[in-house]
Length: 104
Image (cartoon, rainbow, N blue to C red; front, side):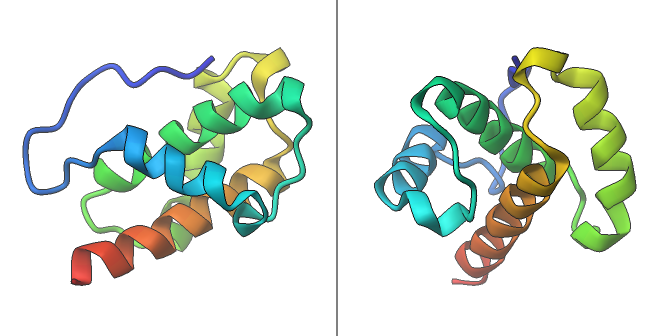
């Protein structure tokens, strides 16, 4: 399971519980089909996506996607990994939401 190891105390800090609630209230928005047993893996991947966005230094996702795939494989244990296509969709959804949120 992926766990965030540090808290950010700058303007990039987000209320992760509110963000998770947002995605859980609109399950189809991520484009990921997960049964109840995989929901914890989706949550862990969402946390990975937010952490990656916040620590990304403004580098566009497409420029980081290869390194993020390697990082996800390294940090998330095999039985908890979602298929990469699902991870990619989650990363893109979070990046898009954060871009809108930070522009407001």
